[in-house]
Picture 1 (tube, rainbow, N blue to C red):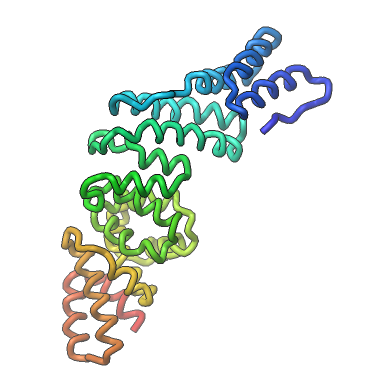
Picture 2 (picture 1 turned 45 degrees about the vertical axis):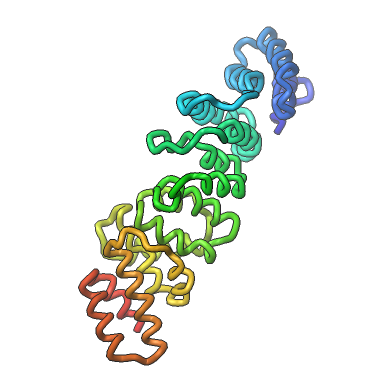
Length: 290
């Protein structure tokens, strides 16, 4: 995206020459244009940011990363240095589009590296997410052994599936993430723009009687059934997880909803007692809908 230009403003014209070359990812042209700008306008306010982006394009990696430390260094440089410079030069929207190619290149060169818990951010999957390539991210997660039992890759898969298939098809896996790592779910929901999920989260935060922190989200799948009983079927697809109280509560609620439909009053009363013993405030929320 070109900067606003006044017909006779040479400094802006020279800046735009650099920006155009950067948009084309033409390192040689960008460096040449930057050198002209730096000679004629050494105090230009965009000079440093343009130089960072020019060197980033010129230094585009051509080979795979040899280890996680090398990837970590490149990722942090892109995130902490190149991204702010791109936003300054291009503006938020155009910078996001320009940076997607940078994240894509990083992801491609990270493919050979296996997942390591102590380098959880240094894997191809989260980089594909940053690049907006949801299918590649899901495929990368699928290569991780037991990914459904590890918070980071499970969160990546949930994020990718939300984009690929929508919330309805992701509820089961989202429940698993809530039980396994409610704080990971909290991070994910802060960047998720699904309006239905955001509406439910808002109601949950306002109504649920918990500790008032991110760990409360472990109860979110169970609470959702008090608000949207029609979600019992997709939530029932959640695989067995930690057998924690929040997981047990959700499964009891699914049973309850089925028993109510069948008119099995005696069994309903029994399951209600179980739910009350697991979490009294959740039981109260359930009763409000009866």
